[in-house]
Image (cartoon, rainbow over all chains, first blue to last red; front, side, top):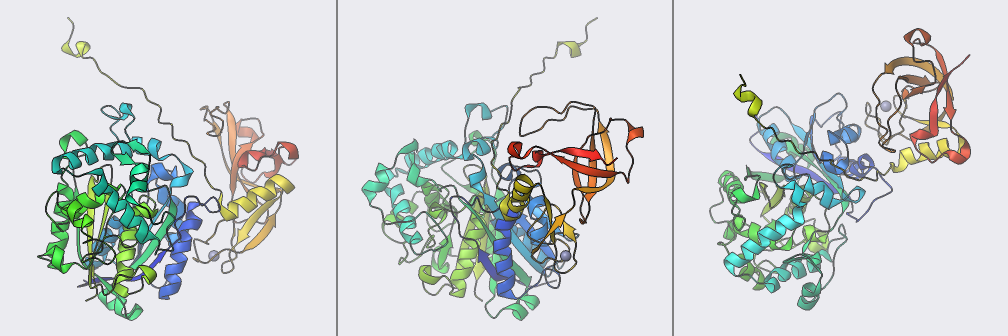
Length: 382
Length: 160
Ligand SMILES: [Zn+2]
């Protein structure tokens, strides 16, 4: 049984609005071949498990990992798929290695949002008898959550727009993403309303791409790299499916996932001990709500914290220095990209978006509408 | 006497889950489909390590986990390795129209290929008329009717 688990390699494709030149296996292989090349590992000699994240309904194929079996090295070998956010690949890879069953795991997440219609795809996430007839999708559900959150804590649209301005400016440092720029508050507030209070600029845009990382037991990791990024803690939790069963202004599932991860990582004071957060801002307001769920501040306090620059690139606790999902990262891939970005920061390999010395980083991913399932990964240098 | 069971009303809601897709064929299948459409030729991809000639052409050899690279022209004839006669009107998802039963599906190993290709057999759908090991020949649509999908293949004809 391994005492510790480390990330030993990270690779990402460029995320672009549309990749008509590749099918999803070819897209995935761009990241897989890069991570194998950079670590010097081979599927046959080194990798004994593979975990991928994708969705059948997005890929238009049942058991959507069928399409990537060859490229991930799953032929007559062990490969498992989760129809969940990419962060859960790290969660399950960690468990597999800690159990002693596996030594070295290839984790992958891939999605081509361009090949279908997000509103129709996301409508199928709703109960067919109870709520699907309304035509609800993730944006309209998120708007209900945003409204509830903002009215409960008296948060203004201007404060939410600060998240957009910060993340899209951060994204100008990130060569892998496609939605970036320096915007004013007026420009953000002039963006067309899609589902009030959510505007076009508040929504992570459609993107195609893949992320692959390799994780290993301590013994294996130290043979592969002199810069292992240790998995210090993991946590995952589901909230209720029906929106009506949840208090949308709160995120109990994230609180629980974070508590599990912090307990494992022995973090008592997240705000002081964490150097960097990469989280799933699928919609801009979620950055504030998730920061509260991650225990960085009290309920309703994240807006003020953001407006004071606490989470800025040069702030005390940079949040999404990569630009986050608003910068253009595909759904499902989102959480593995959060983990990858956090790992690159710890290794000091984040290029122009490196925020300085990062010893402890937190990555958060979520699946389902309004963050129903939450996954938290704490990463560290030591 | 009427039982309580007869009075239970059961509700079910009809719904069509209609999700539109446009699937990228990708680099490898685009070349395969282009050759089929423009030149009426079949190409497989050969692994540089194990030499298996694979259909459909794809980026990685599953067995060796190396990038496939060598394009191999295959014959338009092959050998039947399996078949079934269908009695259900299965739907073509690109047209939404059913295939009229009974009809025969067959798996044919084209000459020069290690994989088989599945398509319709242009034979009387009677078990006695079809046998494993039969030689089969591809029938394509006319050049001007070919669009670059697997429907450019009409069926396999028995070689007489
Ligand atoms: Zn091979």
